[in-house]
Image 1 (cartoon, rainbow, N blue to C red):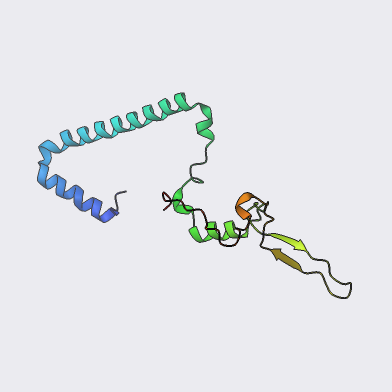
Image 2: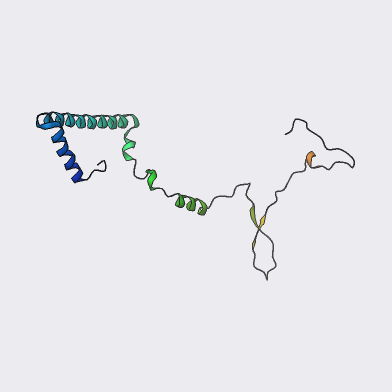
Length: 137
């Protein structure tokens, strides 16, 4: 409760008795009790309004599981690196190269993609200048 232990609470209560005096202390304790009751009422009203608007499935949520303080970034990264994903087309594919029967088969990595022949791939004739784009950066 606000980082105050029992002995500090007793000291604060005695200080309040001395500062406020015995004649005003009951009045201020009643005001404090009313404030606490009104805060509880507001919190309960907000909880009921949330339950009305969000439905009953809001009661089924495990809020402790969603607490960000429980996440360890090292564990998240380790899990992400160890999980097996389907390879994307941009990643090199492991292929089995044919091997003689005496040698064990080892995977090889193919880093080249087959390219379609296009007009840009064609070589320029001897002595011809390459096209120049003056708007290119």
